[in-house]
Length: 218
DNA sequence: AAAATGATCCTT
DNA sequence: AGGATCATTTTC
Image (spheres, helix red, strand yellow):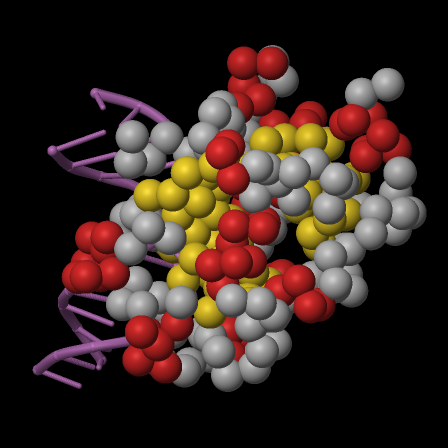
């Protein structure tokens, strides 16, 4: 039996959720630890899940690339000012969603952007949501290799902004797979050329040899 | 009230 | 290299 079969057949909350404390640490620490974790979404259509292979840290007031730069507080950014372990979902370029995980205690408006997943469960549903006609192995790496694509594949929209990842049907899980220090790399973040100095901060984390990362900046 | 701007993706 | 497309933010 394959891993994907196991995950998709178990619809009860048998998969344990990462606890609140996981999300309250330093944002760069959380970002690095998120590599290898499973992102799971249980919906009426079924379960989809993917292993995180690429993330970016956004570190609040001091970070010109962050939406919370200079402590900008608005209806959109409000969720970032709450406790870690909640979803921050926003729309970019009028057509794509980005899924972020709030980190740290309240009043530290920092997040980790999830940029790419290795599909693990519900691959057919993912392909369907992505508008891909037939599912082929070749298409697997094209399901969630980018922040907008993974939101589409996982069924994540702004309706999930503010969701508690420790309580609901969208959550993170650890299935024991470890990404070793030697298996990851760091680069500057993607598409933030406007951010001055912050443009060069190495706050993007990738699983080096994963074929499921976005191909941006290579 | 109007203009500018994207933490993207897909096609040329 | 450029277009799609719109919520949010900034500027007038």
